[in-house]
Image (cartoon, rainbow, N blue to C red; front, top):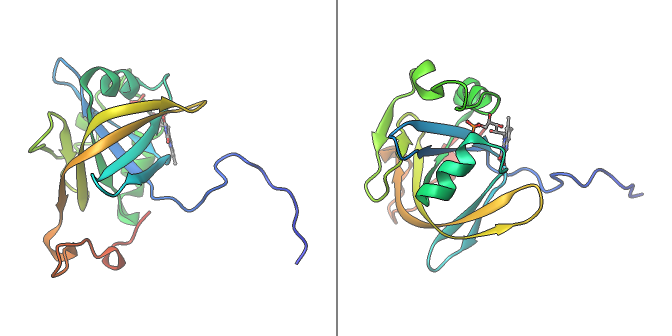
Length: 163
Ligand SMILES: Cc1cc2nc3c(=O)[nH]c(=O)nc-3n(C[C@H](O)[C@H](O)[C@H](O)COP(=O)(O)O)c2cc1C
């Protein structure tokens, strides 16, 4: 098979689409859509999320050092698209969409309650890679809908319809 050169931007696909939620120092909650996200350590468990410095959420994560990764399903596409195309700088997006939040157990940041998996993270490092700053988050607690947990306590991803 002949190979041709294709565009380099975001060439590693598919990757899970997630919503990163955070809370500023005045208690205002926010969330943004993030495609630049991956596991980056097994022991201790860590994941990385890439946030562009111009995002309203960027300063919040930078200042507070905590965030929550919320895994979204196909049914939540509308919420994902809105949070990924409007800024918390202009409005309270979570209030506007009537998004239900719950408190983190380990970090002071909101969980998006209707997302089936919520991963509480504490920033332990960050790397400016170019357009994005990759925040390395130590995983502090993982919440999953009961039916997604298998007998070993692992998430059964086959039961999720990822976006
Ligand atoms: C599919 C999709 C993927 C996105 N991935 C990222 C990303 O990885 N990092 C990022 O900083 N912004 C990403 N964005 C853009 C932000 O979600 C968007 O600019 C958002 O409005 C920022 O919200 P904020 O200003 O309230 O933080 C993505 C948007 C979409 C629709």
